[in-house]
Length: 149
Image (tube, rainbow, N blue to C red):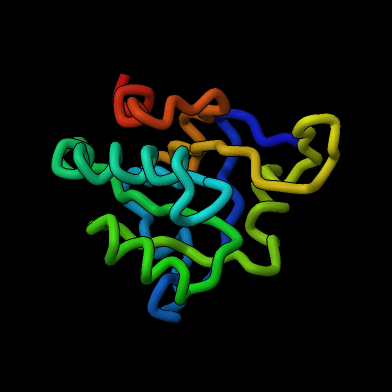
């Protein structure tokens, strides 16, 4: 089932880069930018994370909390955060359960080869936990502008 704007965002609990449990409900009363990306330290994912990092103060002023999600391990996330000086947590979804809940673990096709992977997607969730926006065509180098509009 594909998620749509106006629906309640699926609740989740997973671990961040330090092994600390994080749940969507921890952020009730705040707007959440939940962005799914394929892999730490890759060019597109780094561009996207750095765009959010460079505009983090602006996002905070607008009331947003930023959470990145990939299937990478907490250790991989820690290295990515340290190397890129990211000010927001990265959530680990190694079992892909969060990806499945949000419908972003899909078959992809590269050079005629089919494989399962993360569809780069951002969910903007309002203070009450409702999906306000779903960004499927992410511009990695200008992602903040897509969120704030």
